[in-house]
Amino acid sequence: MADECFTLPRLAEIYDALDPDRGDLLPYLALAGELGAAEVLDLGCGTGVFALLLAGRGTRVVGVDPAAASVEVARGKPGAERVRWLVGDATGLPPLRVDLVTMTANAAQAITAPADWHATLRGVRAALRPGGHLVFETRVPAARAWESWTRAESHRVSELPGVGAVESWVELLAVDGPLVSFRWHYVFAADGQHLTSDSTLRFRERAEVEADLRAADLEPVEVRDAPDRPGKEYVFLARRP
Image (cartoon, rainbow, N blue to C red; front, side, top):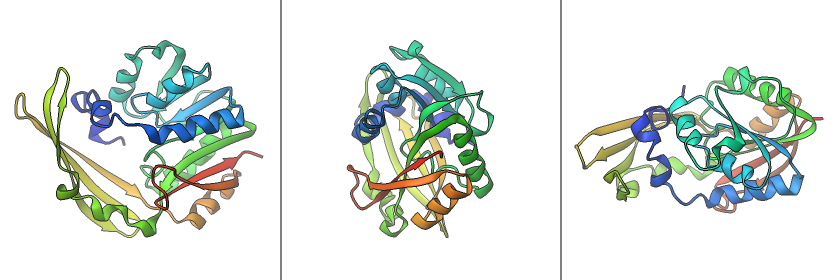
């Protein structure tokens, strides 16, 4: 299930404007070039920012996301016709043979149920050509990122073109072992509407992720540090044998 910030049209439409700095995507763009990936599956593509960056370089891209509202935003962007957009997840993909599968941002952590995570990895393997790669990031549990998910740390008011002022902040709801739940709040000054979006992420240890990859017949190749969050995230690179 996708969160409300991706499924509610009013929130999906402002998602990019609230997070305009996507420097976190540049290492993925560089990796695609490093691997010579001609065809990429962007899993959890959201509003299509990364898929369109790839397509702009001539890469053939399939963007997949379970949130129809986010995919609709992606389809409305300049250059969107260069990407094949699908609403769904890795368990129901059409036949593909891509060079690289990407899961940027929180996409991997948002798959919280072990059965769903294992099914996702199997779907990824099926979509990869032999020798193709998977890359994704996940936060380092020991860094305890959720400790800063408070109103005091996150509150801001953003002036968005055509929308007006939007007040936003995050509220930590629960920490239950590896599962961390939180709620984003959005208040629109134009009409006072207060929307919320609940999320739960699974914080996986490095050894757990590597074991899950091997169980799906994906070979762990390398674990990199995220340049924008040094020491706070693992970036896993795996290969289909």
